[in-house]
Image 1 (cartoon, rainbow, N blue to C red):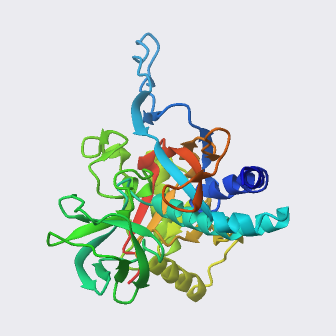
Image 2 (tube, rainbow, N blue to C red; image 1 turned 180 degrees about the vertical axis):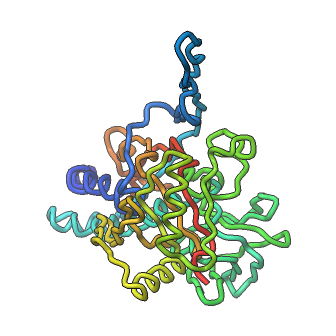
Length: 392
């Protein structure tokens, strides 16, 4: 058995790990593909963000004193790294049956790896647009249905079959027995999910998160575009320069509306918006606009993860427009991707005594964990632009 596990571990490291690392760093979202990736060197990620321009300039005259010094002002952003894991499991029976040759071992691992990667891709893609709390939806009811529980949500955009969730009461308390229940099915029309086991809502409302993830997720774009009080340790109300420009499209998302927001972000915040991510309704409205008005699309932009966007001219700026399911349906989020970076460690397997497979207690299952630690940082969050009421 030890020799078989050693061979499986070698296959994982040599065949799969490099590809998984590349895919996880690019495919979850077009946004992730376009931003920089840098190596994490400290658990606390710090950034010196410029505020405005240098104040030492001034006009003068002969014999008049030169301008006073006005060094560039900076504010320090800080955020802690979060833990990210991709879980791989394989049973002892599967290992035994696949022990005859390397091809059988690869086949045994392949479906498990694909399933685990799909889960990682979905969750990382979702978390990039969250606010760090990990809240997936607000819960208004949890009703027993045999051995399962039917949960009513305000939105099913961030849930999917197979996801393991925790149910919190609205005071952020996790009742005993409310942790780690898998979603069996999602009714998107009625905004309900069916979960395994019994979950109890003890207050008039609550919320759900991915298992064990409350307040532990990436500080994503939702922290910039959302209504949270702080960002990177800075109070928004006291520092309005870190808040994005907001443009009300009035239910009519056109190139002129986009131009107005992009120009304002450039003129007053020093941002060069190069990516516009549209929620589902906003994207449909924009497609209707370009088809109705014969707007010229300069080219299509193909992302590694499979998404295809429009490359268009907005004023003098070339901008890629893409549909992003985790952006609110009726909104458009514009970013200068050069201002963002993901600071993280490489994705590596956790090892014990040189091996990556560890038996799970009281089971016949072996588990391997691919881990990375890091977070998302933006040097100019105020340079982002948010379009609301993009569709009727």
